Length: 171
Image (cartoon, rainbow, N blue to C red; front, top):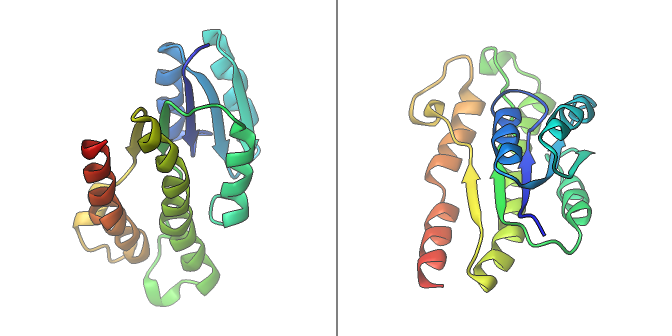
């Protein structure tokens, strides 16, 4: 059986590129995004010859992450690229609460929940790779992306990274 990879935010940009690399490296894929373009991305990824399943799910919600976990089924995940993210733009005081809340829920809450659920079985079997897409934006103030930069700062410096690194080294 081929190795299995889950790539979030895989409909465009960095996520799609990560999925293309994984497909070329021989992984079966579950590609996930919150938009219908994920199906077209999956169609394009199939040219590499592997199994590709697409899932449109809102990873800003725990239900969306649970949908992803259900779609993975009983397969062991060999590679997780936690790439889904959302920027807000505009001056913070002009942003709608729903917009910045969605950014926080996508970039932090959904990501942390997904990682916690995916890392447990990886640590138990002492196998698997994880790539978390941070950003240089997390190291600088962002006058027109204050919420995005703050969420990426959390991801770049999260205690989750420390816990993950220490657990994986001990396993």
